[in-house]
Structures are given as structure tokens and as C-alpha cells.
Image: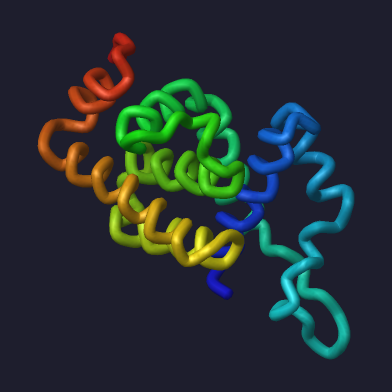
Length: 167
């Protein structure tokens, strides 16, 4: 499993924990690592021992998770706008958090190609939900990707969120 894929899975687990109301971000983050969840990656067993999750994975997952939490209101507004006929509250928890993760990457991580963010999100949806969830996630993210390409990111963020962006 690639490092960034693993980091996205970690973020999904942390966002899920937050979304079901168990913890705030900082508590969920600490709890995740304290409980040894980093040992759940079966493909990381070598000679009977679990490999330690690299600092690179931990840093990327921290960057994503904190960015998502800090921009949650904006991400939710964007998902609401582009998930036609779906209120955010009606979208399953797993899919909702996959969308948050991918939308964050699309808007705030220019170093990640949009196709990579969308493909990773679809793969997460197929792995942790259903094939239909993968199609739903792909459809919503593709609409957001197309809308983002039509105007500058700053203009799109303003239009999408109805928020004033300073800077």
C-alpha cells in the first residue's frame, strides 16, 4: 500500500470517529495513535512484526485531517451544493468523510493532481462501502473538479461557499 493511500485511510478513520460524535479532532488523533490502530495494516507485517508507520505518513495524515477539520464548514457547503438531491446529513458517514477528504485535496492541495484525489476517494469508497458509493463519490467529485477548473480557485471558493475570502 502506498504511503499517501495509507495516510488517507488513517484520516478517514479519524474523521469517522469525530463524525459519530466520539471525540474532538485532537482527542480523536491522540486516541487513534494511542490505541495502536497503526497496526491494522496487514500488508505491513514483516517477519511477524508490524512495521512502524513512517513519520511521512503521520505528517501527511495530520496535514489532511487538521486541514479538513479547520475548513469543515466550507467543505460541507461545497458538498451540499454539488451532491444533487442529497443533504449532507443523508449521505452515509463513510461517504461523507471521503468527500470531505477529497474536496479538501481538490481545493487546498495543488501538488496533488485532481485525478489522483478523485481516484483515491473512489477506491476508499469501494473498499469501505460499496461499488455504488464509489460511483456516487466519483460523480460529486467530478462536478466539483469541473467547476473548479472554470474559474480561479479563489473565485470558485467564494462562489461555492458564499463566504468572503480575505487575502
